Length: 272
Image 1 (cartoon, helix red, strand yellow):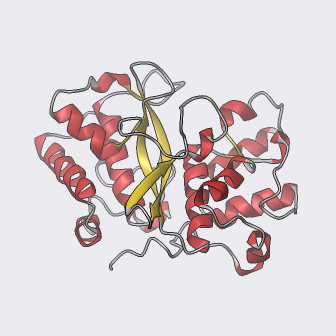
Image 2 (spheres, helix red, strand yellow):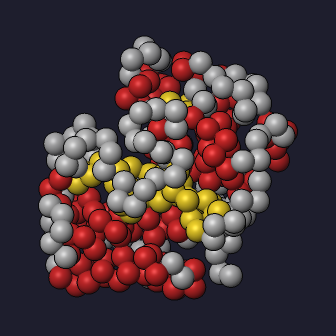
Image 3 (cartoon, helix red, strand yellow):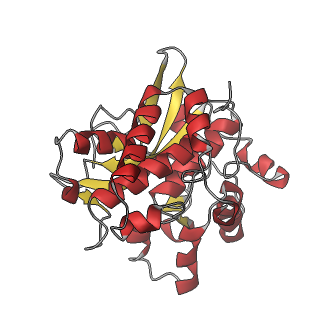
């Protein structure tokens, strides 16, 4: 197996001195993800707390080890201890998904973050979002779980998202190419500019990287992504995204790894 989803990756490896903090973690995958819901807070929620401005920079942390480090500087309790809102790390949906991956993997549970769009936040829209998948050995399938919304009412069963409730970037791209969705209804909540075809392209590439255990920030750009956002790419780039979407959908780790090695698609060292 080229990609081992049960072992930590570049952004999901905890430091040795952080391992005692996870000794009390649950063993059930859903309960592990529920722990993350108690230690990360989304920037939209954090905006109501009057936190020091410098705390908002926590959303730019990439490695799980840095997220845990920021958390324990606020409160040194073990991770399974739910913090009050003001003592949680400020993080986007990507933080919820990536930290969930880190904790699942440290328990030896195959897990991966997925980048795409949720269809349950706003009627008729696909909102930029990240979720986690873990491998359910008994059912022989990947289960999509939204750690950010566990315990909330945004979606009926965030612990096992139904088909279509979350679309990876590649899945959204395929629907767009088939003429089944309006790309202008897919984008980033709270913005007026970050909508449309380029957003779908970008999330397709970020999803490929996440499948290769490199869970970038939602706004990281590399290869021809910036040119795509500026409307400067052509049909050849769209054909590349077709290949990305098809490869991710096929779920072959060998094919995913092989495609990711392309200079246009691989995350450069400076983004890591």
